[in-house]
Every structure is written in C-alpha cells, then in structure tokens.
Length: 118
Image 1 (cartoon, rainbow, N blue to C red):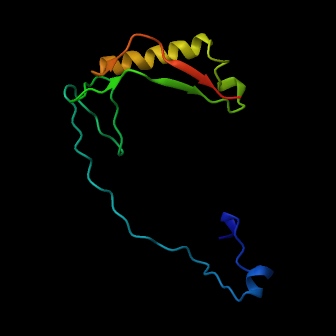
Image 2: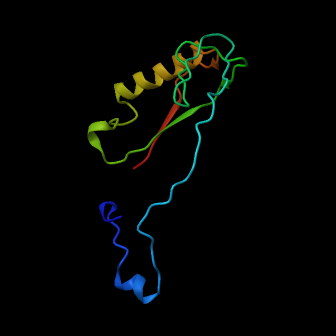
Image 3: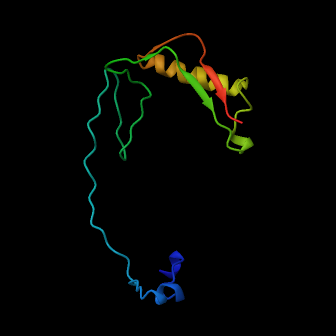
C-alpha cells in the first residue's frame, strides 16, 4: 500500500477509528468473448475489444448535410491547429469527409462551418 502512496496509519483516519487492511482486494473477473461486428462490406479484425473501419461500408448510410467542426484550443500549441484557416485542419476535415464518403455515407461537398473557442 505504501508503494501506491497510501499510508493506512494516519492521524486523521485514527481520529475517526477507520482501519484499512494492508492487503488489496482481489476481484474475480473474466474476459468476454469477442463481439460479432458486421458491416455492409469489408472484413473486420476485432482485437482487444476494438476494431478498425479502414475498408468497410456501412449497412445503412447516414447523411451529413449540415455538419460543423468545433475547434477547441487546449493550450498545447505543438498539438493544436492554429485556427479555422490552418491548412492542417482543412486537410484533416477533408480526410474525415472522404473517409465518411468511402464508408458509404452521404456527405455534402460544401465544407463545414468551423467554430473556434477562445
């Protein structure tokens, strides 16, 4: 427990007569079987509870008629887009739009509105 940064013998816990066992609890568990995931077209590789959609088509396509992009600035400049006109952001949006189209979605050709936070 001390390796985890927890010292069970503290004055605060003692004042409330709280005692903590020195052994960690063992919780039995099991690994569920892999999910059965299907798409309209393509082969999936399910692994560790996840799968990719690199070369698949949806059974029923969605429609992206009026979509927007929210650009949230988190203060990490090295990983951030510079603003709504940043070419890297525009390329990213176009790649996302093309992936949606290739997966069978009905996407408008006009670029989405880009809304940026302060």
